[in-house]
Image (cartoon, rainbow over all chains, first blue to last red; front, side, top):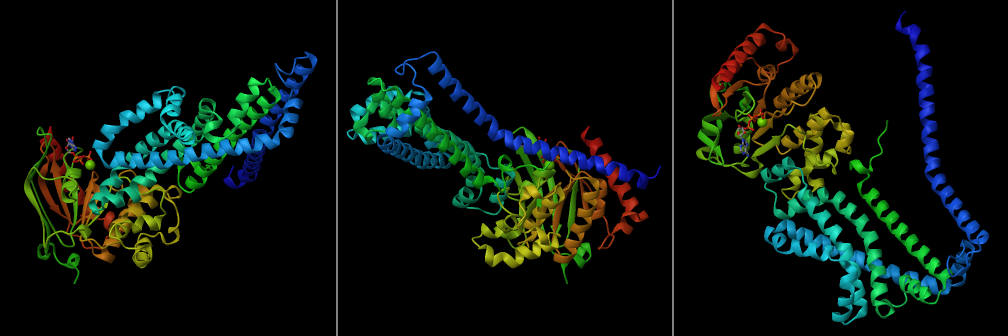
Length: 286
Length: 261
Ligand SMILES: Nc1ncnc2c1ncn2[C@@H]1O[C@H](COP(=O)(O)OP(=O)(O)OP(=O)(O)O)[C@@H](O)[C@H]1O
Ligand SMILES: [Mg+2]
């Protein structure tokens, strides 16, 4: 049998395989969104049924209907609270980025700076922020600054440690090439170390975004409304004192929604920055 | 007349390595009494078993290492733009396009992309990558990446190009093609090359001088010349002359390996 005889027989199989793969991918794409949505709907439904059928009192567990009602009713209170928490979180994150990157660059430029200060960065990181926050409140005059510092402490370490590793991770041969071409310190940092560090930095940023929110919530809990005004976490705390569980759950849901949005935005930034060249952002054709 | 067209003995000297010794950490003697003269237009291969110090020679010449004793001198002194280097890996910046990678030596001299654009385009054309200016390294095959690395090494028209087993990681078909193209390139720009390789065939095909090195301590124990004229092509690759030179180089290499044992 010659090749020409076989060709028409084998080609359609390839086509079928191709079609099957395309179908599988389509199903995957749809499932990625529908499955979690389904889980959400089912659990909200289960929650609702449990609360109504078992007649759970609303001060123990409010039903989803009540929470939704509260969210709408209290929007004049919750929306500004969300803005306050968001402002604290983003400010802390921005400072963490600046502080983390500046320190990381300083560490990689001077071995002595790294030796002297890195241990303290670690100590700051491993000491639970909840234990530091009350002290900040005592020693820092402005309650707002205290709250900001509190959130910053939590968020900055992943940026610092990731960026430091990233700046040192440049390819050795490339580094040799820069030496051979007589590159200056600045050129080396700008054209070699910084791009090498970018994926590491962005990984740190993703973690730091979530941590900044945690830091902001802790700050609001400990320092309270004196610092930043009535944020979401303070609202949540007050609602719990008043047994206003509908509002408590509404605030809680908004906080985790903020966390999700922050994570999504950081992932998007990371994807956009790396999509052209970095392995992590490349969708391989198979 | 370009120096490469002159007979070997009449070419002006470019680089002189005399009685160089290199020891690492006081105990490992990588090179001892290593002498090497490279003249303008030479294509010199360093051929030798693994660990005989070939890479060390290149790193000394490029200034990445310093000699323990002995001297390396350049005719007319050395500037930073005298060298182009190609490593075994393409060593491209993954975040930069092919053209931007080739721009690097200019960029480090403070030249803008626009001011070097003509040279960059020339270099990429010479290595056969006209249509890949804006391709990122991940989109290029191993052989194409190596071509970008070669373009980067020659774009500034350096006096000397160092190549450390540049094609060792490539398949044979790609390697043959790159060998041909490298010679064509050399004809066009008339550069001087020191080429490290493990392959007897590659060294004979490419070079007009082969330095066979032995290990422990690393030094040159045989020098062969391959007087066949350039351009060389497949006819040369299948000629009796080529086979004879390969036999001679192979014998010298065996001798070098016997020395080490
Ligand atoms: N930085 C270093 N520190 C200590 N020893 C080294 C160092 N670099 C090279 N050597 C030693 O020097 C000797 C020569 O090394 P070199 O890399 O020059 O060999 P080579 O001929 O390039 O080998 P290969 O063909 O495997 O690349 C080896 O014995 C190696 O162990
Ligand atoms: Mg080597």
